[in-house]
Image (cartoon, rainbow, N blue to C red):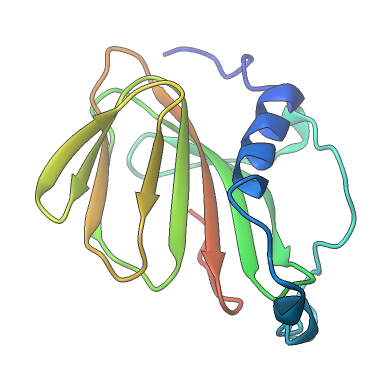
Length: 161
């Protein structure tokens, strides 16, 4: 199994920048933004997070998840970001959820079960799992798949992996 020493601040910042570049939020959205629930973190300050500071959590499927951050943006969207490592053959069974996810593949090969249609994505590729659409993920390469997951919702409650 390949070590995750290759995930660094540059990779993380590239992933965050790529998603930020997907589009701006209109001023009206900022003015009408939903405020975070009491006790919910507001992601309103820029920061850099070293990979070794991200707590690793083993998963039942043999993978590892590293939580990066979660909270409500000043514009009202709830965001959760984590880095997942899925060993060859590792699976997230088909499921659906209310939030939307973007997966950016850093290493390995993922197979997306997109409502029964199988699609493969390798390094540099992006997967969108839309709200309330059945999907599943499998690591199909010879090495572990390492990928960033950005979950976006209208309100708190995105369940981190």
